[in-house]
Length: 451
Image (cartoon, rainbow, N blue to C red; front, side, top):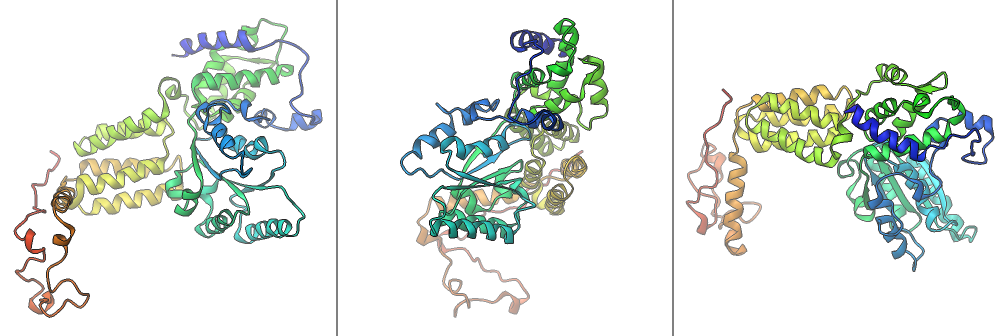
């Protein structure tokens, strides 16, 4: 695998790395300030076109951002957006360039979620509104909140009010699922942009940029493939797992006596918490996500603990959102185990909470525990089957025929209502509408127990 990737690296290196002792500065920053900045910060894109990957979103000709700009020309007001996706894919770079690239007069105010207290948000938003009302500013204001999944509901409610009254254009960036981390009101008013992990070639492209910016640290007196071993860059690209920022960090740490060798990279990786894996080189993350989830759920349904834990490991190696995995386990607990073991739903819900609280990598343990618990639990789909039967009956009847019978319509029960607690808690009377009396929607189906 590594040697195949190394061949690609050789082609890219010789095509795009320019060996020269004259280094072009990336910005007007002074040399000592540039030196103090990490490589990923020095290579932060200055235009949207410089952001690597996710062209379906970032292309200004046929991407989503390009279409937003085109549709906003008349009003000169940009659509608020939520940017979600794995780390190191360009979310923050887009957020910082989104408004300025459309209209340089836009003013950008940036918050980390921890800084975005309600009091601080109130102060900033009220100042913007007051300055605009007083004619002190005519420019539009763009408010960017990074790590938005850490914002409380109260903080998000304050942001919502600012979006609703047009005070700001809002940009939220998050690595979490926006469907659980962002309130409904904000999601309905913001366009969702979902970034994918970088492909191998895109990661290599970022590595090439990094190498070109650090040639002063490399021994350019020797042949290129001696100074920078292709197998070393291949290992960096694979270990980065679609994260451009991580690739640059590994690249920078791997320089030893002016060279980047396989040995120096292995030394860096041996101290890294991230396992060297070829996942992102061989499979698209979204493909792994949906196929892996399908495999895990089917293994649980089939009471196969080996398959369940294997597909869980696949999902985690592919950097699939652990909260997404936990939500699917909750669904499986209700759909596939159901009434055969009602405790399964409690276990799965607790797993979601544990995953949310402790985060990765320790969240691996409750996820594995829950996947195995569900695999070994008895199975029953009687709840889902009962609901499907009831849906089918309602869909084939008039709505008026589906309403409760006399005695069950009013809150107090009515004159004909038989109060079960007055009769030992059980009354031999159907509560179904007249036309559905005798229908059996739920029946205690046989419970399937693992061998």
